[in-house]
Image (spheres, rainbow, N blue to C red):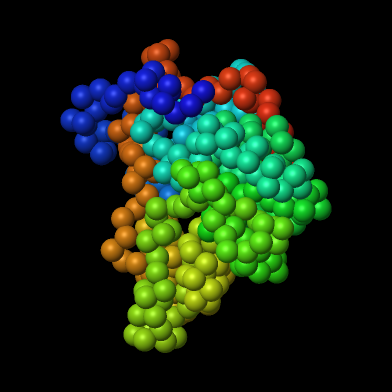
Length: 367
């Protein structure tokens, strides 16, 4: 089921929630969590607002939350504080006796929406004519269930920013070439780190249905879907140059969804978990400019006052779709479960689930 059909089924936040004080909403959430106990599981992505993440039973990046949902067989209700592709993944990895809800159906992912299943299915036979049966598809978990199913059907796997290198290495043991969706930057940075030169990578333009490269087709080993994260594209080499000029002792660490140029100019790069762990383990007094989502950067600033931490781009907005979920929507989701009229349940049809699960399990097996 795609996000458009889910949006048609969703309901908007009842007006009376907007009149509640923060203290009242927090108390009502605590009461419901205590009432439902282990029947309720609230996973929260690191990019969520503090007002929401404080109630998460577990916080993590995409890989961590996928593993936790797959391992949790006790919760009857999973209220996913993240974005729609994460809730889809949770639904596919849990049992039919468990229900997954997204507190606000507007919480999507612009990157995931850049890989349309119809464009993908149209691209595949063209790429087969160009390269023959030499390609295996990989998809970032930041993709729709339909894209995951396409990848599963064609013997490919999902990846996260935490395990992308491991999964790309695996893919090259299966086929000569990879087709990486939907984030070109993660695909390019990962392949480059594994020793594949940039001239052996090409970009697939889904709008013109053409392969963009100046190299002979036979030299191409990595086909990158023309997609990106709008947040991480907000970091530039000019910002790094500014840090070098004004804060020469400050280290720059960025997410691999940033462009190749930004990653190359930084001191270090890695997944959300890697960034968190690096800052946690850094010595007191160390100085950091972080290139990732603003909510997480602000949380790290609060958690580690003994370290000087700034955003690489202090004017960058938080992830707008991730921030759709707030305390009021979380409370509404929980109260609708208590009332026996749950809202915004995420369900993926069985045929899609079976194929997408192949891609997910190939990843989890090697995570």
